[in-house]
Length: 387
Length: 230
Image (cartoon, rainbow over all chains, first blue to last red; front, side, top):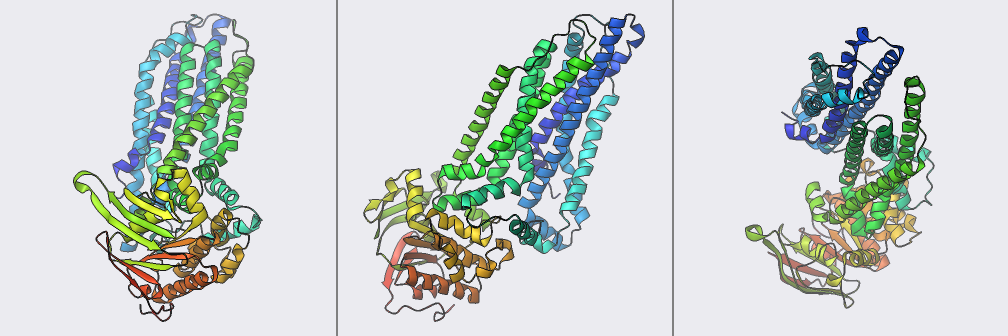
């Protein structure tokens, strides 16, 4: 086996994202299915309004959470696989040179689907622990006849088996695509993108020689790995949207919903931020070591490689703020419009500021922690790795 | 002047502890060309690392014009390297996502050196200044690394097996560029190598064996890169 289980386990971020997605989707799908069983028991107009609103909520939550997190998982998988292939170019090049076909090598990448299985199974189990509480809270004011919890085995197929198979197949196809490079190029450790294309892009971009090295490094770091940019924006988005939404959900729904949203938001934000920053620092270890050897300070290294993502993080935060406001407005003004006793919803500036300050603290702590890590990267270790 | 006094360095701990440097004392004058010669594992690269301030020795002093760099904090040591030393490594370590020009600017910006293009021209890479490292041959990459190291106008240039990854022709060419620039700019050279022939280019040769200096000899007649054997 070329790709081992240890490599797949490193995909803990995908496991976490999948766990969150499956947890939420399983709970609301289960609830949505069980809601259908009480449809015939509805007698009043008010009951029908609440029933429709809850059905719509379950659908929206599943679509948004499931859709967003599925997309994020796919991007994370591609990102990690690209990183894995880049880090193992030489080994893969040797295998290709020995006569192993792309298909045979790519087939061993199915193991990456196991991280999805771990996450999905955990999310599925977690959901079944939380389902009774969700049912109780959804109908705490007894607007509807009692909805009893039923176990739906088909959800195991949808939420655990299918995602595992889908991600395993996706891993194999993506690996096959990435391996379509001559063995010699892999052995030389060259990138998949032709360097000449990069050079052309560089010249077209019109960067003058007046710009400083640090400025150029920032530019190259920022645009060199667009997937990292996505993760930083996504992390800030999750933090902003989920923390602000969780405060509002406490008033609009229940404490449990608030805590659940907050928990998922924080897990996603921290995981993606950690994944992005770790990859960035690992991928630039040689650059950091050379800069330090030449006399660039820790602060200059840190600003050039990590500080450059700050504006992206702020943009992600702003998008998250707008998204949660828009979503809650839709829920309150459209989905639950006719429901009696629905509290009014307004944008809450102090909550936004608290969330922003918390995010800044998290982001800067992460940057500080990794700048310390940069300081400790040993030139000897990097040289040994290269030899 | 660089003075090393009873420098020691060990790696690991307990039973796996290895004493790499065992009391090295050495003096180098300004504009000296010193080659540190020794077999693999003799401690020559470690000596270069501690001498250049990349690593701290366990004991001993390393003084540059009387200033002991072993007493410096991490930040002070970075500042010291910024102001004083340049590096050329066997594996070049050019930044892969930067063109030759930007790699050279990495060194030039530290010394506010606006004339770095002169160096790119001097190492014969003017036409390739917009190329990326993986578009260059090994010899060209090493020449880019030479330009980068010299662009920061170092007082001391440290070279760790600079021809180790090059064939004879490109190796000679790289050494030729280094010696030309050495004559022109007047810095001090400390070169680590296991190639005895290269030692004939230096003023002084330090022979290392098992972490100790076995011999220091002075070359009466210095040869150029095309006169030495390979």
